[in-house]
Amino acid sequence: MDAYDLITRNVSEVVTEEEVRALAESPDGKRAYVGYEPSGVLHIGHMLTANKLIELQEAGFDVVVLLADVHAYLNGKGTFEEIRETATRMQEQFVAYGLEESQTEFVLGSQFQLDEEYVLDLHALELETSLSRASRAMAEIAGDGAATVAQAVYPLMQALDIVYLDVDLAIGGMEQRKVHMLARDTLPSIEADSPTCLHTPLIADLTTGVGKMSSSEGLSISMEDSESEVEEKVNKAYCPPTADPDPTDEGEERENPVLQIFEYHVFPRFGEVVVERPEQYGGDLAYETYGALEADLESGELHPADAKGALATYLNDLIEPGREKIRQRRG
Ligand code: NAL
Image 1 (cartoon, helix red, strand yellow):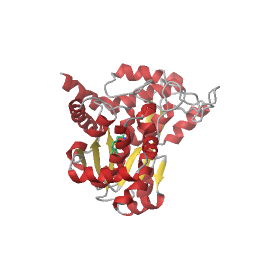
Image 2 (cartoon, rainbow, N blue to C red):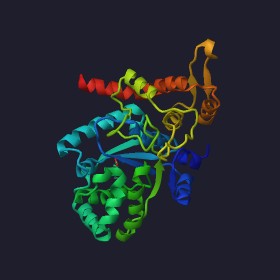
Image 3 (cartoon, rainbow, N blue to C red):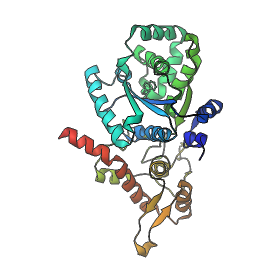
Image 4 (spheres, protein in one colour):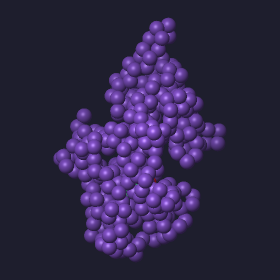
């Protein structure tokens, strides 16, 4: 796979292709980053962008993880002290998950976001941005309640961080795209470059396949789930024998979350998948590509129940080192 294909594998949006092609010509030493509001326990959404960071490390990028403590505070996630404490936990879990410690720089937002120069640049962006644009950028991040002044400042700080951390490539889930577009449009007003961005897909709600999986509502998988909890959740997942299910009766789009997790979590980290089956049901099935697994589910060769069993096993392997870290912490 050439560098451009590796960098853009499994992404939903590339902004812009031309800019990413230029980075792909010499990725060594280029800086890619994701910011996360510290939340104490990694969930499957954090792990999806982390998979992309791990791939970018393989492509030669240096990776910066911003533990966005001030952002979490602005988004109403708790007291500043609580958030700081959870940032440390989160860093340990990312390393346990597989981010190479020697190639990853973890930065706490408050280390630089309270400096005078930063604050003055932030005010300059505030002058350039309408309240309605800032709150639209936040709709997917803060939900319907994106109505405070703090939440309007949030996306401007996210834009500024891209400059202050000297990042060449900004990564985020599709819910971050409006913040990144705002950054591209506004940063030139303070003589900074528009950032190049990659947006990763959102996994559908596990039980319905409708909308996006969320840790606040519905069923999400996290590092603190036990093996049997992961098995139970995966068992309850919506998994028709197709990657492209029909919409609901109400006309809502549906996805197959089991296939999405194979595609975006399992194949990128394991490279191949073995579905174990007793001899009497045809024996083990081995897949070297996601497409081959999808085709077998669609043809009926692979039964959803067997696919789910394998999925739970692989997910448990992925989260076991982080789960162990959490256990040690709690003593
Ligand atoms: C992501 C977040 C916060 C600040 C950032 C700064 C720079 C780049 C990415 C950043 C968190 C993200 C979330 N908005 O929704 O978790």
